[in-house]
Amino acid sequence: IVRWSPNRRYCAVADRKRDAVVVYRVEGEHRTELWTVTPWQRSFDITDDGDHLIVCFSGLNLLPLDYRPDWTMLQFYEHGRMIRKWSLRELVPDLGKLKRTVSHYEWGQCVGLDAKGLYEVRTVDRGILRFEVRTGRLVE
Image (cartoon, rainbow, N blue to C red; front, top):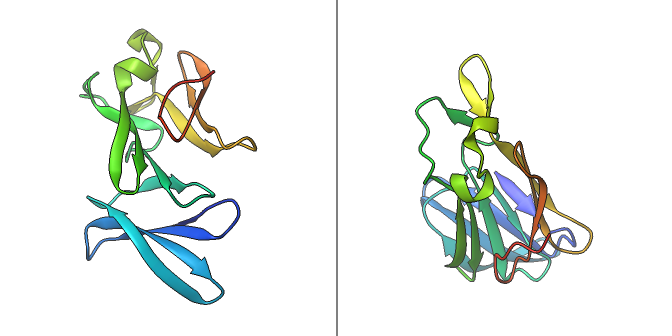
């Protein structure tokens, strides 16, 4: 899995062999490794400055029926150091609004970086939430 920054100067690569997400600066055909986040992740985005990685819940938009409200759904990293994480209960305070599917619950989804560089998450409870990537704080 490879995710590019919007400006395509950085990429983040999910590397199963290293059990990590590796962030690279890209110059033409050359990649320079900058930092890593462990363990391996399935859903993530890298910012235009290459300094911040946002990791979203590995189940994408679906939770298993035996989910726990304290599960981490969203994590913000700076140079490999976690700066903020958000639990399911924090993102979806009214868990009664989770939408049941045949085999799971739908909680929402990580949309990604918007034009202003904010990170968007859509939840079944609160709609669109926007986060400042440098702090992981909710701004809208």
